[in-house]
Structures are given as structure tokens and as C-alpha cells.
Amino acid sequence: MAEWITPKTDWKSEDFLNYTDLNRIENNSRYLSDILLGYGYHAEHAQYENWQVNHFPFSSEMERIRRNIKNIKQNYFAKLEVPATLEGLDYEKLNAMEQILLEAYEAVKRMISAFQYCGDIYTGGF
Image 1 (cartoon, rainbow, N blue to C red):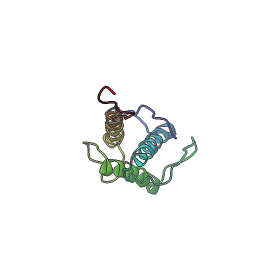
Image 2: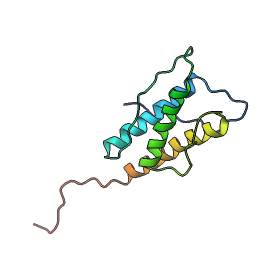
Image 3: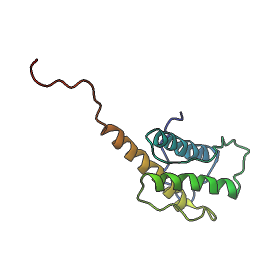
Image 4: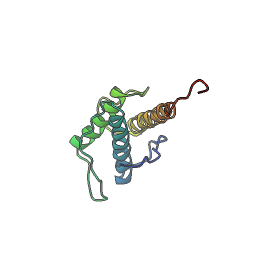
């Protein structure tokens, strides 16, 4: 299973998206999908790309990333809206996508911490 990587939620207009950012976003969406599927939520996740420095993201790949995040939001939780398209990708869309992943991650952590674990229950004095 993938490990959670702290998302970047403070994108600025002068920032540039690179392969490590794409790997983080893909990793985090895969991480959440795996956990949610394990707890019975339908959080289908399309293929995962391991981005390299010489890879260039095509619009179809960016749409796949957007759909993966949208599936997490629709099937679990997040306040923000998923951008309708990633054409004209800017810092606001990147902030929204990574914030959605962060909100879902925090909600999953709260859900897991609220689980009641049961063992043998003893009552009476016998």
C-alpha cells in the first residue's frame, strides 16, 4: 500500500507543476482509494502513473487524475468542488485538488480513530 505524502496546499501563481508533484497527487489518491475500498466504500481508482522527469502529462492523463480525485470526493467526503476540467491548469485548481485529498485524508483518520474495537465483554460477577 502507498504511504500518505503531505500535500502541497499553498500553490502560488509563480509555482510550476513537476513530476514529483504529479507523483504525490497520484500517490495520495491511490492511498485514499485503497483505504476506502478496504472499509467498503466505492472509490474506484483508474491506473496509476509513476511520473519521471522526462514525462509530459497529456490532457487524457490529467483528466484521469481529476476523475480519481472526483471519485474520492463523490464516494467519501470533501467540501471543495473538483475542478470541472484541468485545461488551463493553474494554482487554484492545484490547490483545490490537493485540498480535497487532504480533507478526505483527515476525515478517514477521524473515522478510523472512532472505531470501537470489541473483545470479550464481561458482565456480572460470575
